Length: 141
Image (tube, rainbow, N blue to C red; front, side):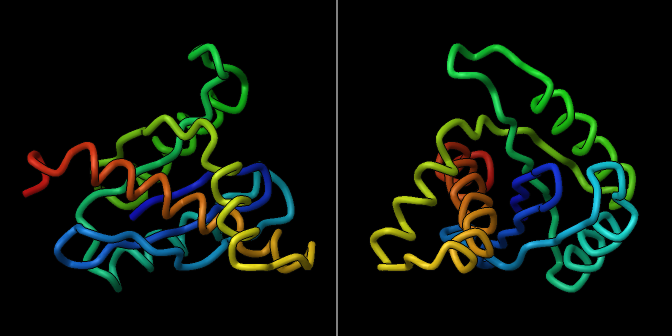
């Protein structure tokens, strides 16, 4: 499972059983960044329903590779996910995944702002998960 953590949304992606392809699953929304109970419960539910064995959380590093406030928030979120699900959680550099997700939406011809906003985080989560699987293929086999 791949997660793209944001201040009010979490994009969720899942992979196929052979760990070859990742696809966007859904967006989990919340009223405020600090309101995580429902978000964590939904992640736990999705993990159980889909027999997830590992979770990957995007780490929003600065372009120079340093960590800012968003990266620290993603680390804290990843730890909460690990505690809630009991699954291993790894952090993956997610620089430019939202830009790439926007490009995918452009290629799809999706111009409606509300529709784009509704899909961009789940697409970013699938890019994070796909990147992780591609870079760890031997270890995951």
